[in-house]
Image (cartoon, rainbow, N blue to C red; front, side, top):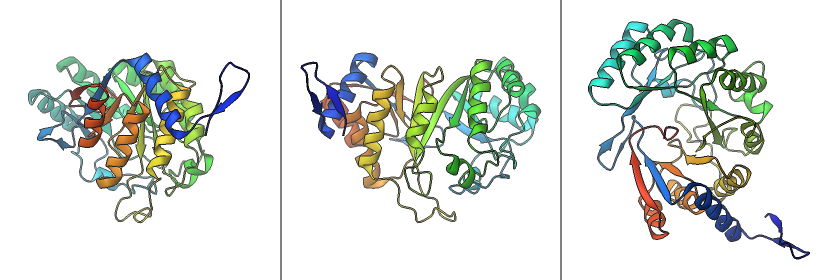
Length: 320
């Protein structure tokens, strides 16, 4: 529960409904009356397939083995683990009318991806196509960030963890959370747009460093932040983990809006489905998020009933 100074000599305790109303109002006054609904490339939503596919530049290889994934997310992706394969994939994506591609992959034991091998290919893709290029950067130094900026990378999607324990025990980053902060610094200095992602419940379903992650994000010149939720995967140590309660997610979205009222807020595609998703999406609309990936029908109905215009985009929710 939050407290606010009424300006009349006393402090008023806000109920959750008050908080949702204020968060909604902040969104409307800063960002207008539109809710954007995104369909990323790996999904089909209401009969439409997204036009922004994720491609693995390491095929199925991953040296980190994070506790929530163990490299399994890579298995279903198109593989482009050589420069000629990536260029061929991008040219075909352009031909079929895609908007862009998300370059991702498995990290080595230091959390790095082989960007030096693919920098020339990225520049060639930008020269020969109209595709936007987003990346999951892994851990970057300044030299590599500048190389990727020169090659034409448009945006970096960075998982921001606010907990040292999470960085060590979940992501297996041997130097801890400082590596992610150094990566954010390198990206900001290079001029690559940062789209920070906060994964709620990433520490075996517990809320550990998520609010601290907000404090980190606030220090960078970002246009949009993305909130996603642990979606427990089979055959991983988190297979039977219970994700955070929807109300916890709603409270976090409100806090994020209060902390960054002028920054766009998105609820990303990674979250559990079914009734859980419906509840979270409804609360996200009430909290005033500006965009939702694969929004539940009832959430869209709620948004429309409150006077919002719905805009559909076939891309990652980090892209405008």
